[in-house]
Length: 223
Image 1 (cartoon, rainbow, N blue to C red):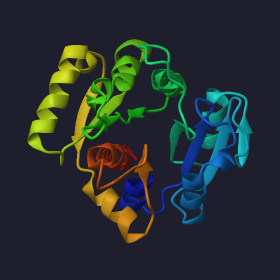
Image 2: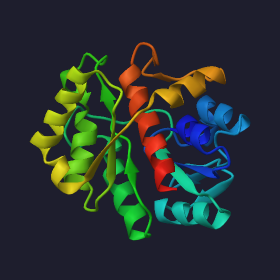
Image 3: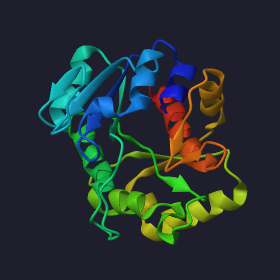
């Protein structure tokens, strides 16, 4: 997501707000450290029980306010490394995505949701659009967000995702958009920045990263 934003608009002031849904020390993330060193992230804000950012906020709301006061054009809000889950519909920290959408809207921001998409994860509940994303967007989020689907996925996969969106009613609550994500991945590769999800590289789980990049590319259009 950072790569897509910086590739489109290099001068964008970009904040990363780390929530406390995963690891609490911000310095635990080698990815964040690398992105900041390379200028893909301009300021880091830790919120809630998380700590170690350039600024530390009591909660997500004050974290968003910190980002705006610092002069950020946009903020990527997500937990640090790790996630707590119990293999149940509501028992996982990824549910925070819905709460983040509500917080952004309540502070008059424009939320752009990054859906968790994978066709490499062998677990059925995470196939295509993960149940984490479906629950967060269909139940927890009370406010409307832009939900971005990569337009450069294979057609068969896009049809599968579209069916999931309709079956879950996400299209009735949110604004569904499509955007390409390839350019952001190419920009990452060009800058020699590695990325992985659950041990899988971009090549091994390309759709996951296309989703992140597409959302970043869409966001620059709003800016």
